[in-house]
Length: 298
Image 1 (cartoon, helix red, strand yellow):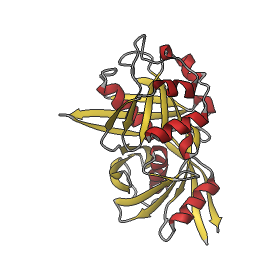
Image 2 (tube, helix red, strand yellow):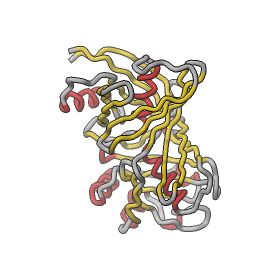
Image 3 (tube, one colour):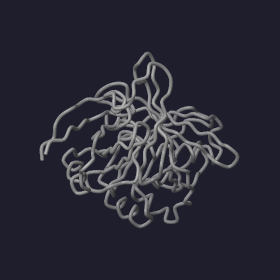
């Protein structure tokens, strides 16, 4: 069997930055086992498998090298950038085209931005945010990262780490300065145990420079699903935007997350958050670049 497959760097304007994802534009006829084997062969944090339903709707499944996940931000950005770039969508000269992906996290909108016939940005809706509570066993979390309670917080204030989901549950871990964030020593065995124990994908560690800052620095660790560290994480940064807004750490509607510095794959994840009555609407997105196009034989 022959299968066309792409490797796409998401959340970057340049090749070899951002977070690479595998993308299969037409996965019709592939079994779940074949999808998992392809994702394992690609050995990227996630590979997306797309089944077109019509011009505006697509079923999408996401696989890490070892398991399927409900949603993946960077693979979504890479997928819809590629669909547009390769003219699987009707071309557009100027404006925003809205399409939908059917995922295991629900039906989510995707906006593709065009300028002079070129795709400039892709933004994806996040699932309805859920605050799943604080971490009861804080000592275990501290042990996972070889840090102390005094290292946790925003500014000089201690802030409880919380489990937040906008499609996937992650622990949002606030750290008081960038030096702590940059120098984390991770015990991946303990982190896998913690993730299993409390049913989360992993930990999204971050440093917010100032109250109402329009930027935030982040790192993401998810060894439970085969990802020790990820260069850009859409869903976790969506959860972070909700966490910061709901807890009153930012008032603005937009924030850019800088991630991937430690992996030498700098990424910029644009997050928007708006509140309509008591409903938070969150989108994450950015740029992307195709770096590889080929045929897989199996």
